[in-house]
Amino acid sequence: MMKFSDLTEDQWDYIKCFLPPQPRVGRKRAEDRKTINGILYVLETGCKWEDMPRRYGSYVTAWRRLKRWSEEGIWFKILCAICDTAYSNGNLSIDTVSVDSTLIDSKKAGITQNTTVIREEKASKSMLQ
Image 1 (cartoon, rainbow, N blue to C red):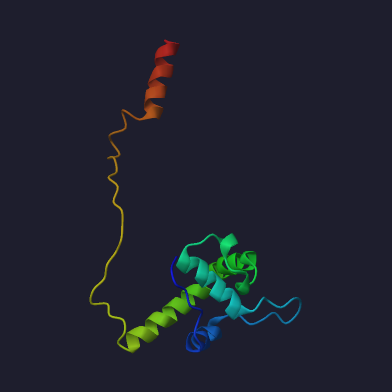
Image 2: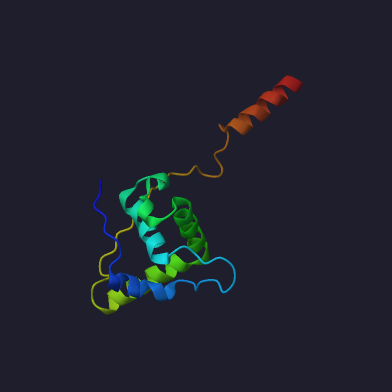
């Protein structure tokens, strides 16, 4: 199992300004820092959401927060800010870039004679004759 450590004070101070404000009416969100630590725990260790330690609150809350903030672009804003700061401080360089990809050969559009659909059509036509 990987060793995990919660956000430091400096890390928390850096990202908290990117988080949406608490709602003015209705129920308040679960504590953001605790929930984010839970999200990071699951993502870093690779455990199941159900196995997230209770000290981070409800795993359902953490999963929903991850999903909702992903859809709202919150995590992307945080990532961009971290990259900008690291680049400005000289801790990130774009001199070397690595892209991980998988290449799959595709069939040429004109070569469709052996597809299942074409074979079935030929079989149907020959049965009708």
